[in-house]
Length: 306
Image 1 (cartoon, rainbow, N blue to C red):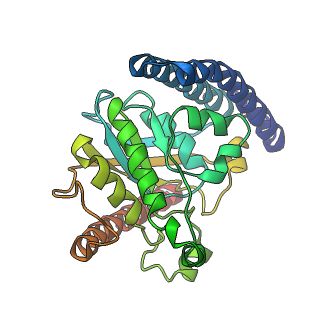
Image 2 (cartoon, rainbow, N blue to C red):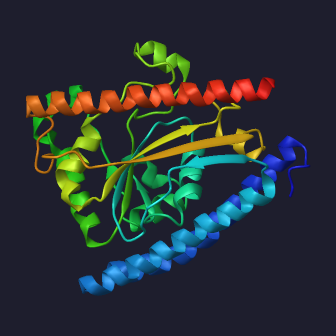
């Protein structure tokens, strides 16, 4: 264990280890992505896609090892029973910080298919990881502002079609797709700015998850409702806090939900009754999550005092 080191040195060491690990596995990954791109047959492309995913899993495993030797974190995880790596899932989660991604990879690395995130198109330029994400078929999304859609109405619905096309590719092999419904990391300033009715959450955006369910709801086994809390840290905290060893506790709750009925083929933007009903379903989910987070934080504070 290296957590005896001073925080700045520990943070620098952790960052160095993770960077080397990322570069190493990215280079290997690029080789299989290249073979995947030039393969003429779908069966061969799927083979190299699976091999590339195995490389990505090794990257996650090595990151987990790095965190084990550099961090002293207490994990409190519930709800992993009956998950299956041969089934497909849609994960919905609150979003506290960039640490969430590493937490989710750690929690689910051996429980369900490799996690894939919806990413902003600009993230494709992230060194090493951007091309790796693209090669692993992570869905890159480009959102258009209302002003741009006004000037270029031909772009209307293009982002929706892109999502549908990505979801079709997910049907070739078991997959886990995650959506952070808040759309951004939580902090109290954002909460007040949008006048969120929740204590620990921003308002959820239902459009993205509705589109995924409309496109591939019949292919999913369950929706996994994920709640992530760092009860020893006040939001927001940065990824640097994780590297320095300043996140002592991680709490994760997993609740498997059935896929809502009659969502396949629905149009969230144009079907008003469906949109209203689905938004209410998401709001109810968020109200329960908000109470759960409050209960976790309260219990932690009481145990910390005792």
